[in-house]
Length: 531
Image 1 (cartoon, rainbow, N blue to C red):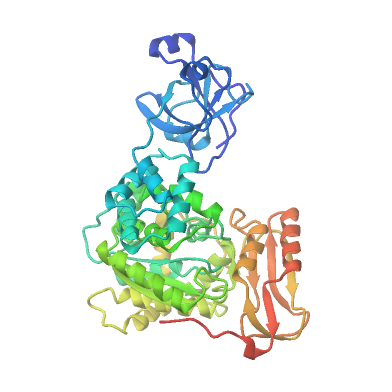
Image 2: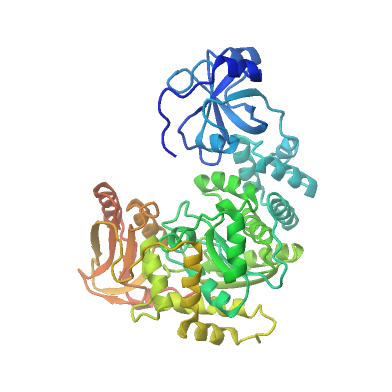
């Protein structure tokens, strides 16, 4: 949104008297990231009369609409005047009235689930009803960021038992929209993340949809990674689609690759993620609830779950991966979701590119059977698609991989992807003339030897410093993988940056640590994979 001009429009005195409302609305151009924030001037008569306190919850009403917001108190009339109420970008959009409209403000009633929150902070086990009340309050923005943080940390430190994880997952799936596609099976695929370049969904969906299975794939944007599926797909097509339009698209083309932010599926999850990610909290219970609640709410009946394992992945060891798989299977079973979990290698990035344009290049090279297509991305996608195809009762176990390969090699997957791109709103993309960021540099091997390890986290950080995913053409293009022999001075990867300053930040980060370990072949760790 554009920053509003100053001063903001003010409702006339007649309008105020007619509505009986004491304040006028002002849009404050501050992004508070999924938190409604209201602003009152300290010298406002209403502020003094009502005894408001900073960070307290208030109700804001206008034109028959009501939102809850956290109150910030200001002393600068350039932000809000004495007879104005300011709303942050999120809050302004939620209220849905014009700037200058008359509004009323009052103290908000405390969330009814606060006693349950206090019991969880104290380490108690909560009931199904407790979680339902907490999630209702979170979804309706009745919790402040402080209360949300307390809930997330309490669940992380207390480590929910598996019944509590089911209660949390079920409660989250029942708030917001819940879809029914009126057919069976409805399939989906999800990866728990942490591996750069892992754009298998953009290959799996067209393969599965070309076979005829319904696959309504809604994906997230990147928050801490260099690109999410929605960011990469946005290079090729629009991903922000009206909900009704998205439903019709899926029914017509048997699949989609869209951003899930407009779907209102498990909205409490979006609120919790806004707190979890800055704290780098991703406990097993919260991960399970986040993933399964959205899949069930989206109407999926069958889910393929990818758990990558590696020294610098989210899951570091096979025993940890197997424990997580058991938890997913228990909760999915209780929620009526058929689940197939695969444990894959997470020791290095998947594909050659990290960043939206580079990842879109890799996907399209695989779909077009290009000679430079990354074979690891192709093979992993075929294995995942094959497992998903075996959700079809007419496909025998073990036959899925061959069917998926035939769909890809024949061009049917490319044809399906092109139809989905056109339906969502095609964007210009030239595979032979990529719109890469203008500033670049190479990172060279410091010695002769074999690539023994690649640091996923370091390369993801370099790509983000270079501007990805906000700058679609920024990122890292990999030239060497684990097991490759390299010579001193040989390029390991090239970094593309949107601005000179970002190029310098990325260069400095790579100079401190390139993310590549070079040594003797026997030092390569064995892969973790259970296909």
